[in-house]
Image (cartoon, rainbow, N blue to C red):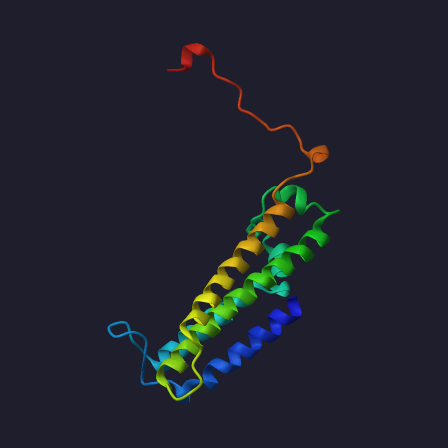
Length: 173
């Protein structure tokens, strides 16, 4: 999955500036337009920032800034004996999220292109709604898989929760 994400990321990063000649001078809805160069640069910036979802970025963050990885029960899942397997699984889930966001950015760019060229083959309106529904379903499934795997710590490894000592009654209100 990580390899597919890297190929799709690089492909979209190269396709965005290639679409520049076919875009209109102003892209977007009336009143919310951007010059075509600004729109392409914005989409390229969003796409470039998705590198943070790649496996090399995840491994770099785990090594340099381990506190930046936000997982439930992080101490358990990133313990030395489970660290590699957890990072591998997390890299696959990050790649899935990255592919979904790449599909969203690519869809936005495709919509801008097709809107300006009515002679090109146009998908029916239901296809856009279907794509949006599939994106939502994809994000839900990735979230569900993440919570299913990382959500609970196995009971045999769960330490007792620490609680603050209770204050004597005279200090309570």
